Amino acid sequence: MLYQPIDRSSKRIRLLEILPSTDTTATIQCRLTTSSLHNGDDYIALSYVWGDASITKDIIINGERKPVTTNLASGLQHIWSAMSSSAGSSSEWNGLPNLFWVDAICINQRDSEERNHQVQLMGEIYTRASLVVSWLGPDDGTVATAFQTFRLISSVTDPGGSHFSNVEWMRQYPELWEESWIDSTWRNKTWDAVDKFLRRTYWNRVWIVQEMVIPTRLWMMAGVNILDYSYLVDAMVFGYSLQVGFARIPDFLSNRLWTLLTAGACLDWSTIFFIQQLRAELRNPDLQRVEKLDIVWQTIRRKATDPRDKIFGILGICNSALCPDYSKSVRHVYCEFGKKYVHHTLDLQLLNYASIGSSSGNQYDLPSWVPDFQSISTSGGYSVTSTLDASHNISQGSSLSRPFVDGQDHLHAFGCICDTVSTIQHHFAWGSEGLSQFCASYLDDGDLSPYTTGIPRLHALFRTLLQGTPTIDLPQDPALVDSYYRALYSIASIYASEESRFQLRDENKWKELWSAELSRLPVVQSTLVGDETFTHFMSWATRMGGVLIRNLNCYRIFETESGYLGLGPPEMLRDDVVCVLCQSSVPVILRRVDSHYIHVGSSFVLGLMEGEARERYLIESSTSDLQEFEIR
Image (cartoon, one colour):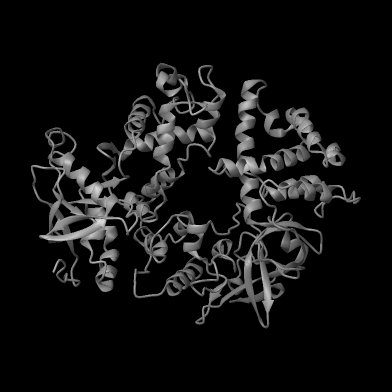
C-alpha cells in the first residue's frame, strides 16, 4: 500500500525523495517519507498546474507505479536533471535538499479526511519550505529570452530612480526595440517572449496565489530555466510604470512597440502586481491578523478543478476561521463563505458577482445572492463593479441597516426601490448594426430634452455604455476587437461633438466626424500633437474598445420608467425593480416573488451611482425610510 495513515493529531506531512540514478531520462524513482512541520527535514515545495488528469505518465514511488499528470512528471524530471547535473550541483541547486512536498503525491487524494487535514496545513507547509519552485511548464523556446530580459531590467532600473519614468536607457539594448517582419507583421522577439511568459496557464490557477504569496524564497522555473522571483518583481514595476506613468515615446521606438509596452491590454502584469501586493501585506505586522476575505474578489476569475477550491485555495492567506472540508457540497461551501463574508464585512460586494443566470441551470442550487464562483472563472460570469458608492449616505451607518443572513440562507438587506425597468434592448450581436441603430434612435427620436440628470443625452449614452469612467483594458481576442470597432468609432464620435447628433445614421459620417473631431477630445487635448498624440489616442481607444466589447457581450441596455439609462443582467424582465441597498456600491435589479425577492443581478445606472438615492428617494436620513428586502 502506497499510503499509510498519517498522524492527524500532530503536524506531520509526507515528503517525496527522488532516488539517485545515472540516467536522468529514465522513469523517476522516488520514496515517500513522513516528517514533522515542527522540527522536521528541510524540503522544497512545488507550485504547479495539475493539468489534464486524463493525460498521465507513470513514476515509481516505494516500488509502485503511480500515474501523475504529464505536467507534474515533466516538472519532477527537469528538477531532478538540474540537481543531478554537474553544472546544477555547483550552482543554484547546490546545498538544497532532495526532499519535495508535492500536493498530488504527498496527500492521499482519495482520503477526504486526510485531504482536509493536509490542506489546512498548506499555509504552514509553504512557510516552512526552504524553497518554493513555481513550475511553469516546459520551455517553449522563448523562456530563456524572457528571463534574460527580466534580469536586464532589474540590473539597469532602480525603483527609487529615474529609469522607471525614463526609457532612454533602452537605446543601449537593441534587442528591446529592434523589430523583424514575422508572420506578416513587425514584431520584437524579446517582448513577444515576455508576453508569452505572462500568458502561461500557470497564472490562471487560484492555488498559485497563496503558493507564491507565503514563501520567503521563491524561484520560477520553465524547462531548465530558473529565475529568482525578485527579478520578476523588478520587471513588473518597470512594466507597470510605463502603463500608468507619463513617459514619452523615445525616437528609437516604433508606435506599435510603444503601444505594446504602455497599453495594459498587451503586457498583463496584473497577476504579479497582485501577488507582490499580498506578499507585502502578509509581512506587515499590523495586517497579519486582519481577516482578508475580500481577496476572493481578486481571485474570482482564477480557475480550479474542484469548484470548492475557489474558496479553499485562498483560506491560507485570508486569516479566516473557515476551514477546508471536502465532505461539504459546493452549495454548502459557497453559502458558508457568503454568510461569513456578510457577517464579517457588513458589505454586499458579493451581489456584484451574483445573478440568477451566473451558472447554467444553477447547477449548485445556490440562493440568488450567492456568487457561483466556479462559473465566473469557467464561463466569464456576470459582474458589475464600481469605484463609486451608490448607497452613500442612505443609512448613515445605523446598525438597523446592517445586512445579515438567517438560518435558512436568506439574505436580509436594507435600502430603497428607486425605479422600475420599462424597456430592455436585445443583445447586440457581434458586428451587427444594432448598437449604431440604437444610438441613432436614442439620440434622434425627436426628444431634444436632456437626460434625467440634466446632462446632454449623448453624453449620458456614452457614459452609460462605458460604465462611467472607462479604465478596462481590451480583451486578447482580436476577433472581438474587430467586431466592435465600428461601435467604438460611433460612440467616440458622439462624444466628440454635440452638434453631430443628426448625422449618426450614416456610418461614413461617423468616421469623418471621428477624424475631424479627434483633436477636440479631452483625452487628446492633454497630449502633444503628432505621433505622440496618435500613440496616446491608440492606447485610449484600445481601452474604450475593451469596455464596449465586454459591456455589450455581458449586459443589456435598459431604460427605467423615470428615464434612467443603465446596463443590467441579461435575465432582466420588464417591471423588475432597481434598488439601492445599504452597503452595496452599485444598484441591483430585484424581482419580487410572493413575499420575498430574487436578486437578478447588479447594474450600472447613470444617475444612481454616487449616492443620489438619498436625495431623490429618501425624504429623511432616518432608517424608517429604508425597506427590508428578504433575498432568496
